Length: 200
Image 1: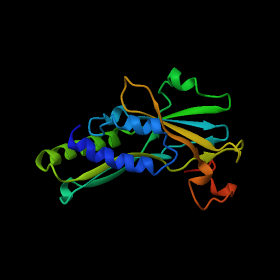
Image 2 (image 1 turned 45 degrees about the vertical axis):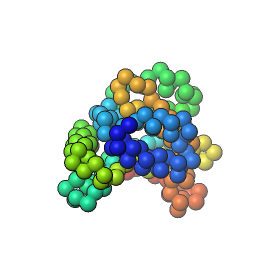
Image 3 (image 1 turned 90 degrees about the vertical axis):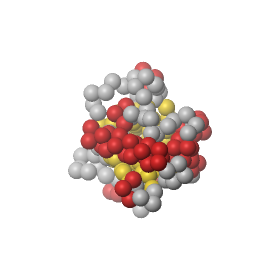
Image 4 (image 1 turned 120 degrees about the vertical axis):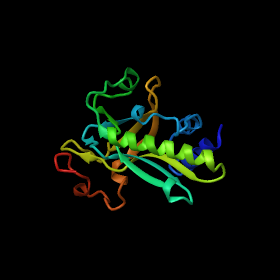
């Protein structure tokens, strides 16, 4: 395992262990993931939501950052993923869907995928010249969700899946993410959860 991978992996696992919604199996999976070799165009996020809950463009964010003493090679990107209605939901995800659940597929925009690719190149270039410097991380966050008329406080949890290569299956990244706890100010106030029919 090269030093680039160790640095980025350490940051990812730090984030993972701090979040109880990330399954142990996912942490193990991340040990084989090299963020610098992941094709941004092949990154796919799938969100499983119950009836009454949905996600919109930007409700899931991919963070990618790298910090050095050289501002030319330092960056902090927050990429909102957007819905791809044309993506065919694979059978292995369909098997986990109940009658009152649905899957939403999301990906980076072409522009954000290119920006992430350029960031990967910059990290590789910096590390080739400075073996001991720089630290970075990549993470996937569920930052928001919305409700419709069928929303229920007792059924408000989402699962987030991630796929990093075209020839691999989705794996569970975030489990039982309760949208009523994403914002500490909600406090069971229905109006604090965005309505899916309103502008984001």
